[in-house]
Image (cartoon, rainbow, N blue to C red; front, top):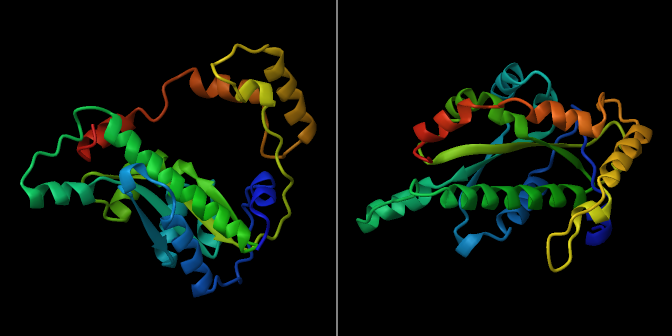
Length: 240
């Protein structure tokens, strides 16, 4: 096992995996056990994890999301879903109302719980000397993905995780300057030059996937509505 701090500081995402590598069942169970020990609000554990081994299901995922072929070529794919159905069943059993749509708070709780479980899984994977990549784009085809995995009301997909043995070594990606992210005692204004400096840092890093400066990438992304169908989907799932 690697030192935890060193492990976290050296995190990187892998998208190329050895298709012949078979994840041992005990390794998978270690990852899932570590994931399930993630902190959660009031110990509510408002998430579920779908272990996707079936090749046809993974082929369908890639059909829906062709920019992520690793979902098929990795050793296993995990789908993390926010799950408020479990407590809905509790409410039915107890004979009480289930007011999860009265505010966004339950949705935030379930999203956070699922995200923490996902991060625990990433750390466990790396502790085992393996690699992974988080796939948030499963939400781009959220209706089809939900249908593929028979997600009931009060459940929605947060992200997937491709896990396997990397075949291409990746470098640790530079992060934003500390002064642009870390604040002490109060939120503090910072010099915009820090962001422009980061543009140059990432340009020097030279990752092939990054075809735009960091600022341009996010200016382009947020200049127009994205995934507007998500609101309708969440309403359909009784989450809004």
